[in-house]
Image 1 (cartoon, rainbow, N blue to C red):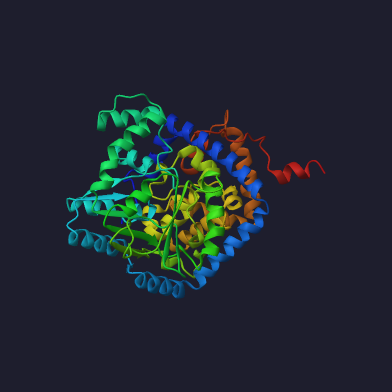
Image 2 (tube, rainbow, N blue to C red; image 1 turned 90 degrees about the horizontal axis):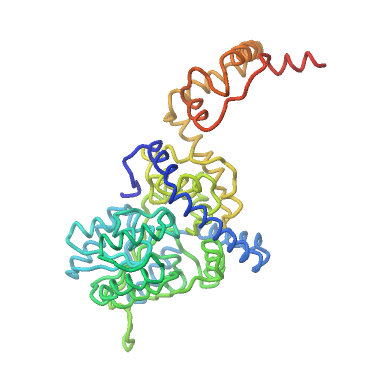
Length: 468
């Protein structure tokens, strides 16, 4: 699995990204712009909380009846002439797709933007077979050229400015034009147009699959997806197993909230519906259609204490309001899924060994709870992760010791009183100009950016007693 994007320690990643001025400026601008546009769309739609509640109920209904809807979907796709494969793991999914590519003797694959294919590490698997993989989404294409990873769920290259992008194009493709979005986009369009025509296979993600008809719904802001799914002879759609809706009626509600929450628009530029391969008499579309339905750890959350996270529709709204993401950017999380959603989801899919730090990359301000279009209590789920790590005994030794000492003192009033009196006197003598002579653990991290409070040498109880 390629959920993990860095071997560097969490603290080292934080240090690097906090000093990345270009990234931080770009993220701030994007958050403010998207946030303002989102609010306009929310106000325009009206009854926003009712829409959120309806979307939550739709997603809850799907999760409660997931087996039935997955069966219905697979039957419909098959009836439509397509093929369905249920992948338990990332390896199962990539092995199946690799097998199709080998059968087709594929030399070139074009992809539209897909987080789940990033999650399963599909590109590396295909490239290891000598197959050229072209990311056709503008942001993903730039990152592929740069050898970089996405840092946002919806806006993958949010951390780069136009001058950095121009340098990537110049170094990798010999671009000599200006650093304007229009000129650079036109240049890239000319470069990849031939790739669409030459590709043997087109691969896409799936925003929602409609169980009633076996249709795949894809929402994009670029025309690349329609080229990737109609020109190649084979189309493979990869979806997380929870990305379902019963009928088009429910998808309509989900898309309404998705577009407004993600980019502050009424609708994305392209809303594409695909139902199986090309039929007899039709002039475009693939000859072969495959739907790969990926579990990859999602069933571990289904019906359990983290079930709520499976309601996620990958809009990225939580990233757009998160004060932590604003300061540290997406790469600090070391996961394909950054921000609040990534801090909850990554430990579930990838385990605590790689992602034990992410539940602490949060101030618990609950801003993410307020904007989530399907009402996921992200802050509460992060607290559940912290509790679970304590139960499993994988929290830092110093933290365990500190909590035990606090619990001991807190359970014995006399010990607490003595400790407060001694602590007040010691801190008044030791803390000078907001700094302590010895800084370790949490105190050390705190004093890098803040001053410790000064003490007058008496505990609150003594202060209160002397004034009553």
